[in-house]
Image (cartoon, rainbow, N blue to C red; front, side, top):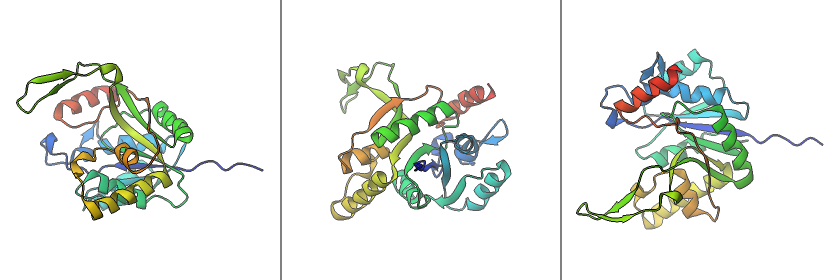
Length: 239
């Protein structure tokens, strides 16, 4: 009897406002070498053999433009394009609800990390099968200090235990969906500081008993946030 292959869905998050880019064009749709930034991210998942389907989460009013882009570049794995919300975690939840019903595992990826490699996608798929929850990260190399409200250093942290978290963040689909449902109920019943919900891993850490595994990321897998990041990304992508 053959064992069916797990179904992986990539959810590409491209619903952000990008205010720090100081541009009239939303940063995910800005072009590098003539190609929209988000298209690089989608293309990486399109070309990966592990990925069965892709969901793209976009700002309100960008559905037609995104669909045209997917058709133009032949992104046949894109099964759904859905609108985001005012908070990232709400946008991710919209993406989860738009995933195909047969999804077993999801990879949540920032659409403005266009340098994601095939090796990193493979690594995420490999480890999530073993752990149910894993996040790509790179070791912190700078000295990190804690400061008080007056701006004076109070503590130097041990950087050997610190990691800079990237995406993809990969999870069992049922696990992450239930974690989000629990989060939404907690917010509804008790309220919470939504600004502390900075990524998907923190939701799993707080809403389930599952431990999140940190796996090797890629220093080139930077998030484009400022105009300087755009220059770095252009240099990488030209290679």
